[in-house]
Amino acid sequence: MAKLLAVNVGMPKDVAWQGRTVHTGVWKQPVTGPRMVRRLNIDGDGQGDLQGHGGEHRAVLVYQTGSYRHWREHFGRDDLGYGAFGENFTVDGLPDDEVCVGDRYRIGEAVFEVTQPRVTCYRVGLRLGEPQMAALLVSHRRPGFYLRVLTEGRVEAGDEIVKVAAGPEGMTVAEVDALLYLPGHPRDRLARALRIPALSPAWKASFQALLDQADTPGRPGDDAGLRVGDARGPSGNAGLTAAGPPPAWAGFRPLEVVRVDAESASVFSLTLAAADGTKLPAALPGQFVTLRLRPDAAAAPLIRSYSMSGPPGAARYRISVKQEPYGAASGHLRAHVRAGDVLDVAAPRGSFTLKPGGNPVVLLSAGIGATPVLAMLHALAAERSTREVWWLYGTRDGGEHPFARESRELLAALPNARERICYSRPAPGDRQGVDYGTAGRLSADLLGDLGVPHGADVYLCGPPSFMRELPAALAGSTLAPARVHTEVFGAGPALTPGVTGVVAGPVHLPPGQAGTGPSVAFARSGLTVPWDSAYASLLELAEACDVPTRWSCRTGVCHNCESGLLSGTVAYAPEPVEPPAQGNALICCSRPEGDVVVDL
Image (cartoon, rainbow, N blue to C red; front, side, top):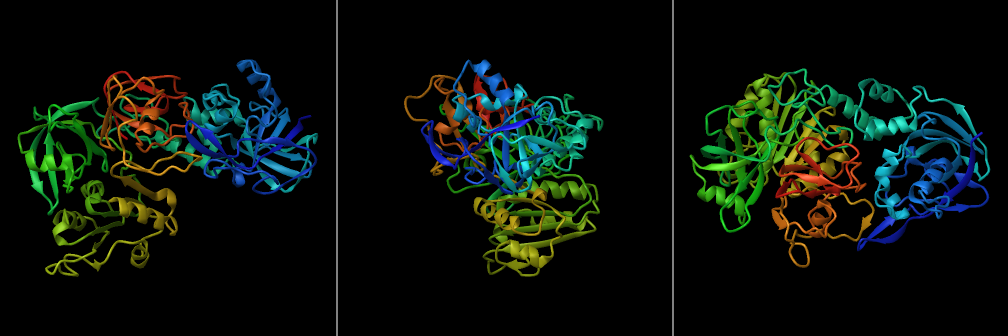
């Protein structure tokens, strides 16, 4: 019979790590005597990062002495005492390849249910002094697992562990863990996992995304039968990060500017075509392209991304640009680029795309944020969609209202379209009820007043202040969070779990003497620097430049760091557990093999 050998608890504390401070509860110590286990925690225990740990479905972490023996032999260490892996319960028995998600156990006075494997996190490696530990837990199939507390009660080291119910699908912890993190995601196993009532909501969402990915065709115009793994179908792991079709071409290719159109006082559009007149590969509505500009032949090129605003299936691409007062790239395009000029352009990318379905669609934007959702409006109008479509747009005044006529013509082609235009500071000649509907800014309150349907898919894009305020306000509304999709121009928000005291500042060159390696361009941040082999990865270089990054495991497992590799190639060390999507890179464990452009 399985036995509870140790109850380990510990409150979060600040720990020095790579020149930063991490607030973590991974340090656990065995305690003597009975301890009360409550719905969310064990008395005397806590988690430093409640986004990744803790909560009802992750109340208690379990690890086994069999895995302790494995790691002692693997690392040649004899200093791994109970609690070293951050677990609350150290147990004899209950191996990951036998315990099933949904199994229930009585320990002492309490009853528990297995909900999910341990999540990948760098902090167990920090605790053990083994930086690759997150990847090793997965690749060696020894993750450990979480318990939900069904009946609160006291537990104590030495208690027997009695199985009181079996999980309905008989899927082991090791099997469920591999299904998410390791290559190969069989449809039948995904469907089985989704039938387990006890599986935590986050893991269910990941498996549903993988199941949806299996039925998603590739680029528009491709064979509808293409599936994951085909050359043109979706690639990557949709259970860990948003996945889309691979880019239509590698790196940059020359495209000719065939039209330049003014859309408003500050917004203009460029129409791009293949020099030989052939049709460009179709893009998904909402995607963007990246330009490589060389206004100064002696300086590093300017690399900027712009959303496509025209019909997604057109033979040409239309991008729309807002000229910023001190924008080097937008100023160059406005002042110097004319029809007949040739620009270096990377293939369409991005996962902020219109999803199929029959539920209502809300296209919510402000300023230049209209561009990707305008492409979505084109797609809906082209198919004469019967979906309820809401076009909600905010800008300063009529002079700064791009695509006004174009959007109204598209809405007129839709049988169930609604529109509301907001001018924050209407000009004297702007006519309320004709040019705009509301004087003021777009807000969550206005959406409520308009009666935006709760089951709608919302696509949200706009300037930084708009993107700070609206998503936060919508999170508190009755709209389903999973149906609110956002696109951020420029660098996205950082994800640095547990790291405290970080003040976001402008990007900059890394400290010290410049490297002598190939150039690394961070496209969204507008920064190009030479590679320095002193850095272990592209992630470390980005952090040295204060480029906003997203990561969790730092060993090629979680895919939080997955970023578009717009040009160039990388080498991995260590190799990722599962490769990223075609055209992307895992920056936490990769180095450039030559000049690269990364979508950061």
